Length: 241
Image 1 (tube, rainbow, N blue to C red):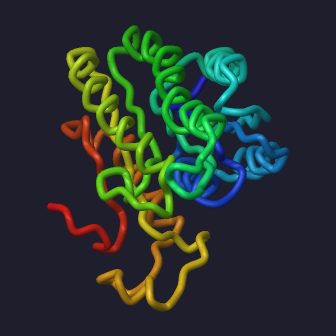
Image 2: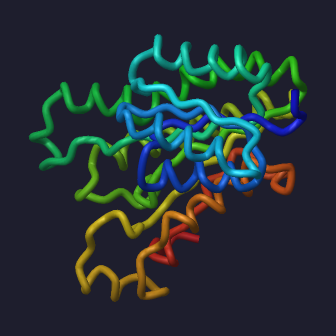
């Protein structure tokens, strides 16, 4: 049995999720990855084959299904016996005109963007408490605290995630467990206009690798005194200070 750390990552089959998985693999983590796509299985096989990664497992499932989250945590414990980091990544919530968004889209967004993180915390935190340490990193959005009508469901519910994260940090900091949010701006996987790029001080979109490195830092011991925070990775787009 290796003494390397173990990380769980969701929505890990492509885009930011896959980049995060690769970054963790390069840093020597053992991985348990989940996605709705079968692509996560081949990614896990690929990462398990690189010299720096002591092991990687892929599962298909959805973050909105509690039983899938239970299966994910159980797989980590069955195969590796510990959980040191959890990266909660998800898909995109529904969009629409603010007062014309149906209730069903708001409820679906609640499951997708907030309750999945609450549920995952409920499953993994007791394990981390026994270990005496652990870290959660949640992928949020730049619009969490500068709400955008382009992303109404995401803006509202990820603002709520910021509050939950702070409360979690207060409650479980004494147990050595940290939780932070990463707030990406417009990343290369999202199609943008030239006008939008002009509004970004760095004049470009971010890369999935830049998000992945930020996530890996927050999960690492190098970020051991950072918890309850919302870290913007947006090229300077948001104006709040």
